Image 1: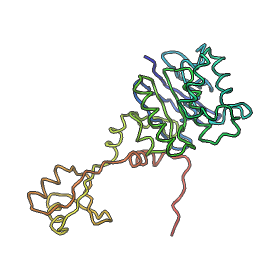
Image 2: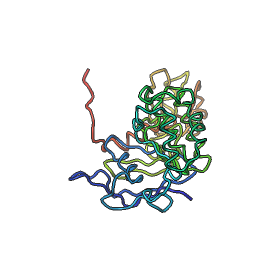
Image 3: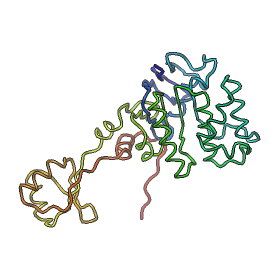
Length: 306
């Protein structure tokens, strides 16, 4: 089983500690979202896992071994950390051919991944003519080239158009369903919520959370119920008698916080309150993430006064 194991990992740059005694694991068969504010240590951690930086202490292994010891690294791990890594004077196809040759990957894989990432028609264009979204696709093609069991992507949706974002969601799901270990760093909460099974969240280089996504949200955001009624007064009085406070939702509906839809439905039904809408409102990943990391952001702005 090919896993990413980070154990007591620390990285210091002079007096600054970018990664602080970090321990977590990334398992096969699921997409793990890697989250944290700017400066949280996500990119540094990924570089440490890939042997691009040396840790001050601790270990980061893939399948029990350091990535730097792999003889054919593209067959072991596919990674995209920098969409601008490809030489601008080379064609997209030549970039991939050089990678394939140096890692003993059959050249037929070059055309396969170009097709898979939607770059087949641009394969003979020089990389410097590529848009950011095309460079992202080329980086993903390089990550897939060796058909590796582990995939690590840093902000893969950056620069992609809506069609490309939908494509990357499906690709990540497919890779996980094939039993691969998939780690994806992102700042886009709605996007991460669309593909992640597990979340690893950092703040100032420390581990803040390592949970399945739904558990992470439910642990930090109170459940809510949305209600619309033909008798606002009766609704408020009924719920107040049972200790529930209601708030206007802005469109004529009411929000009942820290409540379950079954409980609210039973109470208003017994009281004979006419109900036009009754729905559970699940917390979002963005709400849970901001609640957890509010005090962990290294770079923040103050809200502007009107």
